[in-house]
Structure formats: structure tokens, C-alpha cells
Image (cartoon, rainbow, N blue to C red; front, side, top):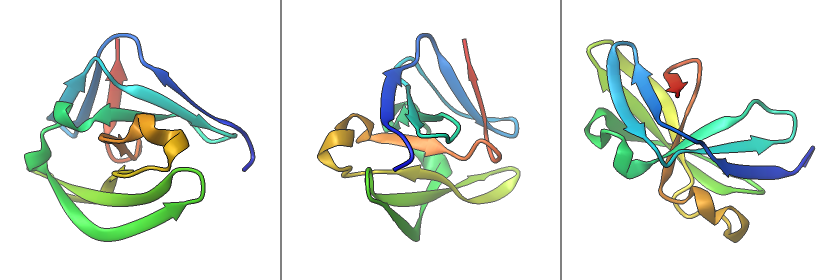
Amino acid sequence: MDGQITITPIVGPVTVSAGSTVLGESRKALELREGGHPPVVYVPREDIDMQRLVKTTLATKCPWKGQASYYSIKGKFGILANAVWSYETPLPDMAQIAGHLAFYPDRVTITSG
């Protein structure tokens, strides 16, 4: 790995939107930093409108986090395919992100503060 993974709580509210559709707001979001990659926001599943997400068959594996499952977002805008991922049973060192969802920043808007 090209750097250490750090997970820190985000202070204050985080809102996730797809177009004009708000998917959820959380005060329990986490920021994951991995090597030289941009930070990724992980939002607890209970803070997201899961009725707007459709689980897909895509799965990937990370040697540090485990197997990721993917979801598409549905809304008035149509479908944003595989725009969300989740490590439903992450490896032990990444247990903090269990039950959380991450979003591709080019497909959703994540605002904080």
C-alpha cells in the first residue's frame, strides 16, 4: 500500500445529494484517507434513504478493506450506476466502516458544515 489508512469522525453535519435529491444527512460520518488518494466520506447506512439505492451485482476486493458491494442511485434524474459502495463485512482493521456507505464524488454532492 502506498500509505497508511486513517479514519476520522467528521465534525458537524454531512449532506449527500444526487442532483436535487437529498439522499441523507448525518452527524456520524467518517473520513477515510488512504495513501495519496482523495479522502472518502463514509456515511452510516441508517442516515441514508436506502429506498433510493439498488444493490447491483458488482463487487470488488481491496486487500486492506475487504470486499465491497455496490449500489446504484435511482431518482428523477434516472439511475446513477454503481455510484455507492459499502464494505459490509470489512477486514478487522477497518471495522469502523462497517454499516457505512461511500459515494463517488463525481456522481453525488457531499457538503459538510
